[in-house]
Length: 175
Image 1 (cartoon, helix red, strand yellow):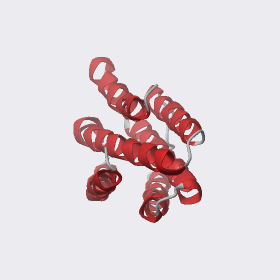
Image 2 (image 1 turned 90 degrees about the vertical axis):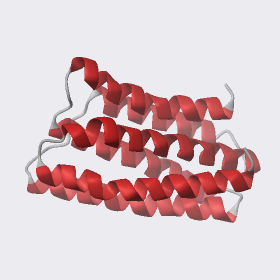
Image 3 (image 1 turned 180 degrees about the vertical axis):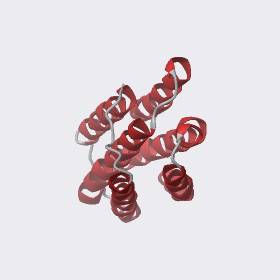
Image 4 (image 1 turned 90 degrees about the horizontal axis):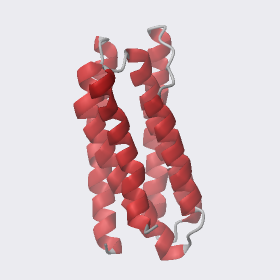
């Protein structure tokens, strides 16, 4: 499968999985917390790989930024969940994210040099857009707890900044 097609397929898994809630009811706060943790872990795992294997210094630095920023969001999410006595709950969406993340990492491990850099950045563009869409259409609107909703809303600008940065890298690497 073409590398960009893989990136889009992995990112669209998030959109499809969260939109499935539209048919089967809204996710509850525990499921939202589980989705947030899974989504961030996917980017942490890919970012760690980019730190180690990217050939372009800017891509390597972007991977490091993803690890740092998404680790911080996960720490905040887990701390809030503990404060609220809310155990992040596994769901079909969280499982889909984990599988998509594992598939992406497995694909990236087969690539080297510029091909790795391009595939990683292409995935980051598609994935961050999918996360923003999921935040806007599913997660924020369905969060019942005000503090959880506030954390999601507070995190959104970082995802937008990541998307903008990834798009800038994508244009520098050539589509």
